[in-house]
Image 1 (cartoon, rainbow, N blue to C red):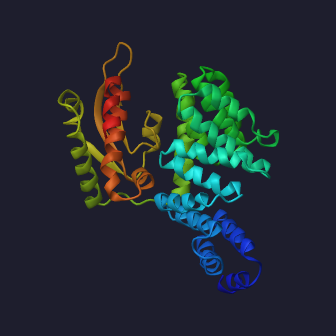
Image 2: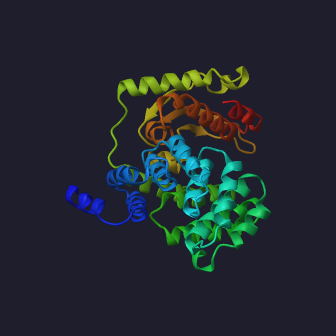
Image 3: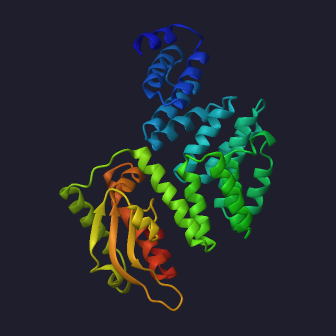
Length: 345
């Protein structure tokens, strides 16, 4: 590795150096991307737009999305004629929830000359997602229709269009598209998960379970062997969930206050078959409320591995537990009046 890296550092111009750094990041070779970033900084200066772009990508690869966003915003402030810089900045802004500025950045990318088909497709998909999250499915559909024809067979296109069609009450069409998405990318759990949620919302309980089981299988394989939580881990997470419960109003707290809490590494196949969401940090065990049937809660499960994937540091665990708890209470007991709690978490 060292010999190959040294050879790369000695050849090519500065632009080629940055391009190779971006490709190394794309390939998952973060160590190589960092070495190329160091060399690019020496040649061009740390505040050069292309160096800042690569710095943002490296920070992003390390999971520091706030730092990545800062680097990328500094890069776009220099008005480079490179749509990929604006698009990466828009992606980060979208992740941190700043959709107004994300939309500004992606529209700049779309307005630049020389935009290749792949970048245009990526930009239109992102802009469509932003418009959909702003409750404008009609504009989201219009934006997505402009995706180049060569990219309309991709799973991401199918999945994005499916989300829009659900909002337009065209769920059966959305399910057909999601079936195509999982056919194109059968090893990507995200598309199975989206399909499962859509199937459940459409009343296809069996289909939803099948999709969620596939999510569990794929994500278990991706994580690899996982050890059971230690006694200390279990005690800590149980205590944090109990603290989160104290944020609930008294009538709602009474629904969950005396229910046994267990901590697991991940949901089991039996639990997912019974209706547990394999991506939820907290899920309930028992019988949910249905028409003519009251809810009966027998257990609460905290899922350590999902929490580890979801939060960047321990300070975010309490909020993640509270949000997930509120969502479970809302679904399990049919308490739509609890939505306020998530907003105030």
